[in-house]
Image 1: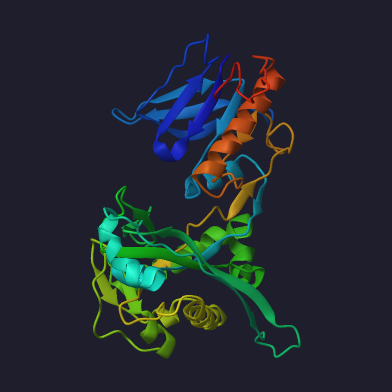
Image 2 (image 1 turned 90 degrees about the vertical axis):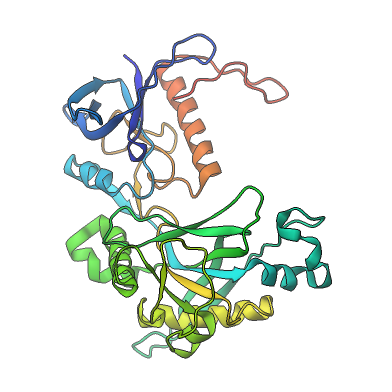
Length: 374
């Protein structure tokens, strides 16, 4: 019986019994995983639905590798229904800040900025990376200040702000760069970690999914601020610092429209104060970061998964459900494309060793003679 690798967010499943050099790979598209098949606290397969005719099919397997994305909220709920243990995990939320790419080039390159020529010149398109530590007294006036950090994340030179919502009533955004870095904008996430105290209002009702509930709270609030229809609420950096609505908006790369909003009212007060201090610190690190053309977009909430599917550190098997192997970003063990790929590779090798399917030989130059993919 094959191992079954699932990526439910992509709406396909891949039953694989494979040695890359010897065995057949069977890839099945047009399927959506809708449930797990569980017998005596062991996952024995999955129930899938055919996208075209909505008929269902049971696929049985010796092992199920779950590679869900960090926004696969329906999967988290389904796992809880089957008694799988989930743990809250650290994650971060914040804004997307966008500057004209020419401004970033001028800040970083000074008199050499003209040599960039929108990605086709002698100098590469400029980017940046900023981070700062922040300390703020807690609301109860105790002697123990709140410690946090704020940092740039996924900086996209010559890029565009894009929609990543999974529900039309919940607004969240991300950034991307074109291959030539040729757009006239540069954007980056500015985020800070979510503290346990931020999640307290959601813990009683949502338990291990309190982080998901906090994300949804911010995304719905951002949607209301934008007026619906996936319009993004925005505010210039100087106006955010002064608690003013931005009556004059610079251009934005977001294609579905932007609307001026009081983003200083989006987050809890202590987070807003800390974001303001972070922006002042960033302007010291990169003079010119605070500019009338710098535009905050809300809201960035999907930096990483807010939960972790607990697993054994050696075998990669879920500790609360036999036969389930949670991997990658949605399982809480990666923070991006590369780390997710590495986690999947390590899980595949661990599973191959457990099943005795193929002996992996590492040569002296660290090239694998045989490799099993799941």
